[in-house]
Amino acid sequence: MTAAATALPAALAAALASDLASDSEDRIVFDLAGITARLDHLRDELPGVAVRYAIKACPLDEVIAALAARGAGVDAASPNEIAQALRSGVPAARIHYGNTVKSDRNIADAHRMGITTFATDSAEDVAAIAAHAPGARVFVRLATDGRGALWGLSNKFGCSPRDAVRVLVAARAAGLRPAGVSVHVGSQQMTTEAWQDAFATITAVIGAAAREGIALDHVNIGGGLPALGYLDRHGLPLDPPVDKIFAVVRDGMAHCRLAAGHDLDFVVEPGRYLVADNAAIRAHVSRLTVRRGPDGREQRWLYLSCGKFNGLYEMDQLQYPLVFPGHPDPAPRVPAVVAGPSCDSDDAFPYDQGLVQVPRDLASGDPVWVLSSGAYAISYMTRGFNGFDPLPYSFVGTEGAGSEGSGTAGSVTDGAVAGEAAR
Ligand SMILES: Cc1ncc(COP(=O)(O)O)c(C=O)c1O
Image 1 (cartoon, rainbow, N blue to C red):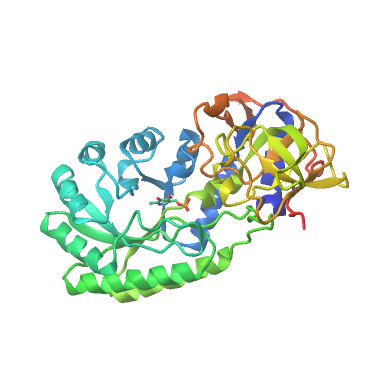
Image 2: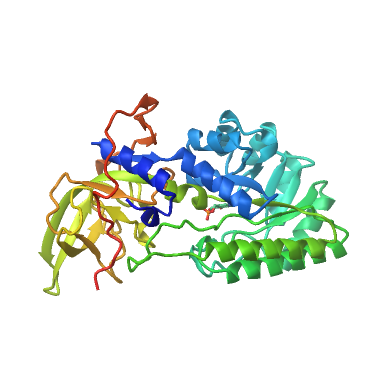
């Protein structure tokens, strides 16, 4: 495993590789030091911006606790996530309820747990917050179109700038504190333009709110910061312009402050940016087969022990880099469709655009490492779909829950990354 392949510093990549090499069973291994290093890097890039980790990206107590110990808070999407954050050491003041979708009961539960800040995007939700969390601070979520993101979070959330001002005015009338605006530019956002557009809308709403006598005091720029280690649907590195994105965000924040005419607090809600590259799955080969399809063409399929329903849910939009530790280069390679173990045809890497070069001599049981697989793996794992269990998880340096790892370090040059599409 190389640093470039994992988008991780070499020491962290080596630690992860060592743990994967010492495991003989399938599992997902997280590197907590890598996750907190990403947090530190984010803070260097966006000084003074409060970090509220989006729990949904990896809802493990250990991850939340490690981030909380460094002063981060969380973006919670339900009362259960709030309860988890509290028991993982996040103070209520650093938890906001970032889901615009919530029932009366959800709001009352959050209020009872001490949550005072809520996202909203409709008059109905504002009325419910006023009734069940009186006096709360609200931030209104602005709609984005999701362009440029692998997963656009449009339509279901957010309102137009005009409605946003109406919602803020309604919040004030209902006795709430209209405190801020928020956006989400779409998950794994690959462009700087999406951020520029979002900041243009935010500054317009800050100005329009001010004309209504509402002085907003914070801006939540949401998630969307990209992971660095994915491959695209063709099998080529995605290579997001992350440095440029940070520059655009810094610039956008300066414009917001100008529009407000006073200082503003900023909040960012990273999910995949923190966790995706800091975990890898130790899976194994189920079978490498050659079959002729209905069109008479021969195609190889590499079936792995994990797939869409037990760890690799996002395989519809991207390819995860694969390492085959028993087949170092220059082992002969063949193009194959990579797929998971279930009886479901969606359980496969995208193969309309490019196949994956895999070792020709793979045998059932051979280990496979799936890199950059830490985001939305735990949260999207099904319970026994087709009888495949959710993957157990551990952290670098441990084997199983809480016990010391005893495996020997594997050579990071043993494996070869299947990052190149067959052309
Ligand atoms: C409100 C909110 N904030 C943050 C995130 C995290 O997004 P990402 O993983 O793209 O950083 C999400 C993801 O769905 C979200 O809904």
